Image (cartoon, rainbow, N blue to C red; front, side):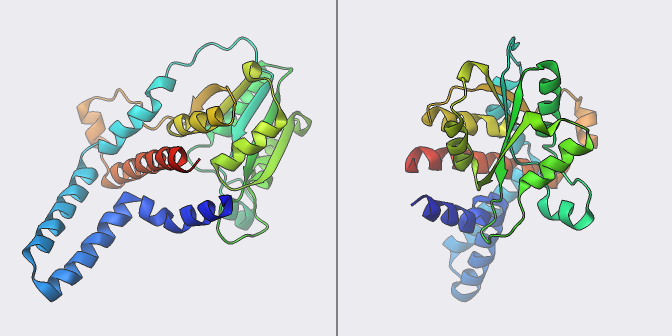
Length: 257
């Protein structure tokens, strides 16, 4: 059953992207309207276009990300860390394989902070959890990319346990559960927008981990003029898609698990 939900989620993933969904609906409705000239269809087309414009030009996605990230902005001081759990995500599998160089996404802070914490807490150990979430299986995995990252920075690989063969966040926590780590000494590192969903899943698995959020997407105190200089329709759409995906993930987990 878990495999069924995994493949279903991956197949439907493009539709979880609201931008894709709205554009597909507009094209389909245009075709139907061309054949039927139905005024109701035309009205729905207009509504979809207005919705797309609003998402593109207003910071709706950023507000959604603020909701997901706000409770993790002020990090509580941690006195003792024994286990540093890092969720995979920033690794560019194909880019690294093709170029032979480390290729990471914007969430590379997950890996960077793990080294910072490990250096601050000398007796700690890093548990890196990841794999390959593509539908078509291949020999590619996020683990070789992560290993290369740590090696390139001369970090001691003996202090890292690499856990592979996972395809999504739920499977990540299934593997973390098997480690039987002490909750009070275990820190979870992932992107701030992804932390809420991660903690919900962790709690369901009986894990009470200390959140250490990184890669904040909504934190900004820029003036209006400076914000205008950075204005981007694609950025607004990307942030809304990110927020929407996380909300869908939270709702789907609560329904199916």
